[in-house]
Length: 275
Image (cartoon, rainbow, N blue to C red; front, top):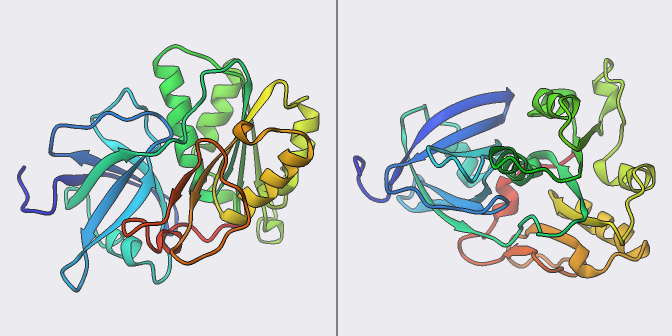
């Protein structure tokens, strides 16, 4: 390890998607840890008070490539961690540990409906890239909702994957069409298009497992929609992050991951303010 404690990694890549939105690579200087697609790692930087500020972040890269760990991160005004992260340059030290999480692609024959808002796309990219690396296929419908068209990370890659014959149906929607006059796709928050996509693709409880990652309001809305259509709790898998002390009104289904401890405290404040 070339950097002093607490750092055991370095920033290896920085790709700006839009102002305040980046795809970030982190290389471990310790022996790399294996992970399952859908899990998260914890990143850490020392703040102004000399304390290590840590945040769990979903890994977006393939589980079969451990040369670096990739993350999709939004800069949040006042966010304790992301403001430190945005001061870094490629090559600077950072702490990384992991993995954790049970938000995993299930070994079933169901179509997977991925619903992501904002940076919640990250674990789904890991699942897709891992499937491709392993020469595997799954029927997948991926819905991604953002505020602006320029926030649609990996859009070209996902559209290309669908064109090339991978059994993926990719649909993106923006919630602020008045600020995106050239946009010709669906509009509205991603949860508002879920019922139509369920109907359009014939997705029923007999054939489908839902995977939800993003802001809590989206997860509540889609979970309620799924329950009304007869989906069992174990068929609606969720990745949830809640700051300490915040009450929530959605039952945590099988596979959900609730961060509500010292490590995850105020994590919601350092995630993207969703569309």
